[in-house]
Length: 403
Image 1: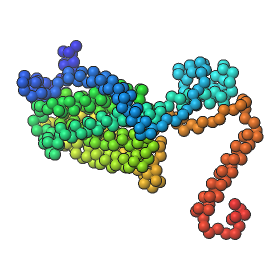
Image 2 (image 1 turned 180 degrees about the horizontal axis):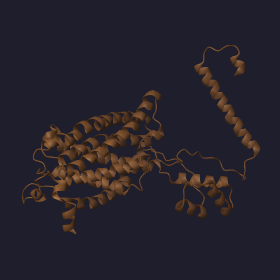
Image 3 (image 1 turned 45 degrees about the horizontal axis):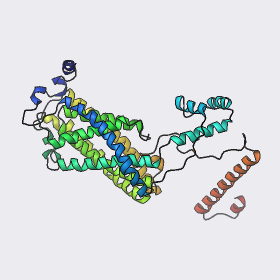
Image 4 (image 1 turned 90 degrees about the horizontal axis):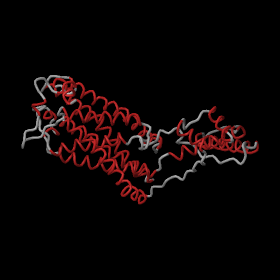
């Protein structure tokens, strides 16, 4: 199996510049460390270790800290225990059609309205609490902050941080420092743990984009390590970590209800994100891999594959930048950021379901419906009057009667 993989997957001409072979990059005993593809197997136990550490962190640190900041969970009505409805909910659909509602009503002896109310309560019951979302955000905040600090400390004195041509001098026979080795594998293990736990984490509006981002990041880090694009890879990780911890901190204070601090952190995050992802990343990092690298070697398959992954990340950056600019526009011109526009807003279709009071009978009486309709019409009329009084100062004498 190893010989087959080496012959078909790790062929020299695929991943290395012409004239360079894998044997040229083997470690010398007592000498420098060079990347080896089999080192990637270490990321799997590292991912499980991150998941175990997260479990401990959330319960011993994040939960008490959420209580200290005043994170409050919404009290939701629990759905009654009805086995037939529970089976349908778990095995078929969380959003039953009208025909399904009618069929379930006949099977359970309940009105269609009570069936719909049960499913609404059941969906709301599965929605993640603010404490769960706070714990997830705090875990990512701690990792991104430590990763950015450690990465910056390990790169501050490297020549390729300031002169990107040094990323390619001597490529690919470039030894990997111990600090950069652990920087790489901790990042890969962390993103692999995020991908493995994506099914139990809070499902967000950009869920598909997040999965694509995690997969592209893992492939990018894994391939760049094997082909010894480590110097460029460290720059990519540093650029990403520089804004991620700001977003997670804004989420934490959003769940705690600290609105002003949350919005201030979000504005800082938006500025850092737009600068690093739309300026630094494409015009410095991608330009380095696409243009400057050609001064040192001829393009080969690994060159195109690596740059394709970088362009996938840049496409995701443009998508997220569009969402962020929409939020910044609402914050600046409307004075607030809509909750469903934030990147942590869930994609559940019933997020805005309002709790409706239970009915005593199977059908509402005509008097109750009439009173509710009259109340809504009166509220609408009052809103129209207030709007006219606010925006129309000069009206003729017949306008009051008409109104």
